Amino acid sequence: MALSLVDGILPVLALALGAASLLWLGIAGRRLGLRRILVYAVVAAVCTALLYVLAEVIFHWWNASLPRTLYLYSALAILGLQLASGLMAAPGTPLSRRVAGIAAGLGILLGLACTVNLAYNQYPTVGSLLNPPTATDDPIPAPADAGADRPAASESSWSPPSDMPGEGTVYRDEIPATASGYASNTALIYLPPAYLADPGAVSLPVLVLIHGQPGSPNDWLISGRIAEMMDDFAARHAGLAPVVVMPDASNASNPDWPLCMDTSVSDSATYLARDLPAWVQQQLGAGTSGAHQWAIAGYSFGGTCAVQLAANHPDVYPTFLDIAGENQPTDADGQQALLDTYFGGDKAAFAEQNAVDRFHRMAFPDLAGIVVVGREDKVYAPEGRQVYEAARAAGADVQFQELPGGHSWQVWRAGLENNLDWLCSRLGILEP
Image (cartoon, rainbow, N blue to C red; front, top):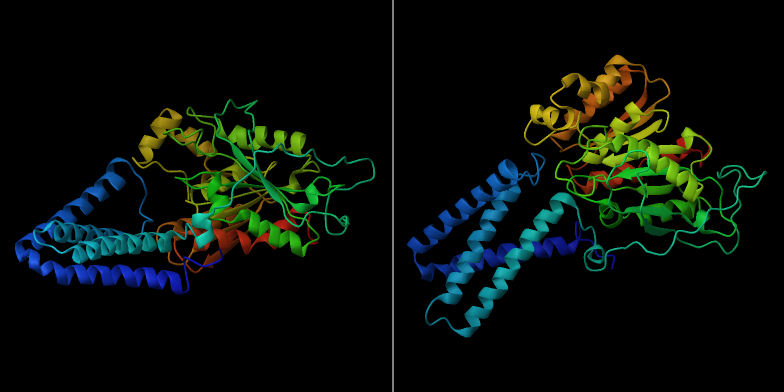
């Protein structure tokens, strides 16, 4: 289904239903008495405050980028659900009013879910919610034989066969940590139509995409609609698109996520800059013509990661796309906690690998990148500008882009899609 959950009539109806349900419960709830309603209001406030403490002080489920209005909506939803329960439990309540109370409670939950989804654009369509795209467990097809006279794939060198598939395919596979010892969950790999053709395109370029925190490679598939995005690009370019590799950046769900650096927690930088490229070149025959065929991109945590990899391994990733990343890796318990956990308290060891510090110390004339931020993102937008200014001062060829929206998929997906032509020019598919 292509019905949108982030614009158009459906979210308007969901929000209207939630508001109407709360209004009806407020009117009907007068029979419960003012004292009970005041108790419900206090309980709603206390529960919301407890949610804040659990989410942002104790467990760090999310950070300051969360729209604060969601706490207000949560409080209203808790109040409404209490009113619904009170009305249904009141002595002498007729069956029709009990049914209406259940329906109103469901309407409030639907409205709350809609406000959360509008804040992050996690599920852009009805189809992405009810029938999300999935990857296949089929074996990945062997790459095309390069032969002596077959150059790396580009629009100028590639002629698609008549029976080329119309769409690419997303596969699951394990990328071994031969050099790094990094523990990893399963990666996702998108192979474009040109790869799947017979004969297939030779040495396609590679785009490595890093997800956010919390998150997994599936977020690129479901919320980012990466297969649809790449298929649309391929349809305009004779079936050509990058091979897209979406690794697990959580260190197999380690409570201390890696920083895309080599630390005492894990050698995630070595995994992403050495193990992953070696596996892709050997198993997929992609990115074999040189570093100019490789780019790294990500959103939020993944954007920070992309900059770290580009600054520490420009010989592997000379092209990067930082979408709403931070100005440096952070820890919810503060910077000293990060230093203690990952670097044994050694600030110099952190600065040795931190991208902005490296930009201040070194020149990067061969590095190119784009920093994308949401115009309404009050947390990450200023930090993104700091990264941009540091990279530009270091001689990198960088751009800074502001898009409508906050810290959400509205920006994250558009940040990649809007820059696909630039990426593929850098990667060699399109003529510069």
